[in-house]
Length: 310
Image 1 (cartoon, helix red, strand yellow):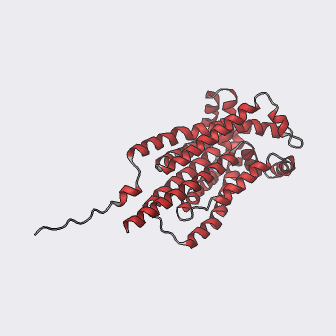
Image 2: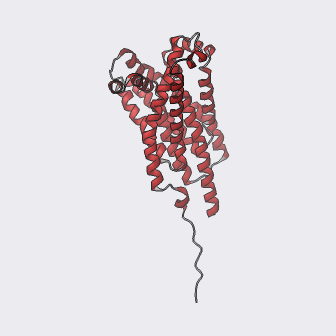
Image 3: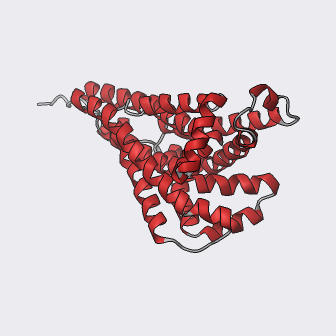
């Protein structure tokens, strides 16, 4: 008596995982493009930063655009933002690119712990690129972006394994993540002001324990803030909008003047202002916005695959 074979059941891993080719390609993209994009953002943003700080009470956007190389600075900044967005969007194919991009944050920690390495890097790079790289490291842009990318990569790995989450987790994430990011920013600002920024101003490469501990604490907090998006995909929307508004406000002297006064009284307050003027706000906003799109698409795809198997 013949038996009717049971219908084949698709394997769960087939719909959830990424092929090895996608992992290799995106991993290489993340490893190479992340530091390049951050260097481009730092170099392009440094021109606007210098323009504003030269006369924070009466700077002008039109005067900046009239500068001989203004179009080049804007183009380089835009190219850096696009490359950084490409790294995050590679998460649609595989999480490897984001995890590899996270290595930028770990490497930058070494530079922040040993200021002599930052000085050595500045001597290797040519002209204004060296100053842009050293300033960007001291402002924490590579660390912040790298740690967020690593956390986003983990969130995508988890999202591809299952999509069922409670609605309450969405709400908790939207409310909690901005607070965690504010605490991380405060710790990073204090640590960077006491350590790398002081070293950059005084050319003192001494190792300082307390600043490093503050920087570590702030950097580590960025990882779970990004991982939470696995359960709350829109948790980074409000921080992204806030960073965009903050970046736009740096075009107005009415905003820069009180920030400059605050920075003069509170040393750690100078870090967010200088970093935002140098393009860090735009870079972080692009990373958060792109990841929100990616995690939503990946979560929806995983939900469809689970529905098809059930």
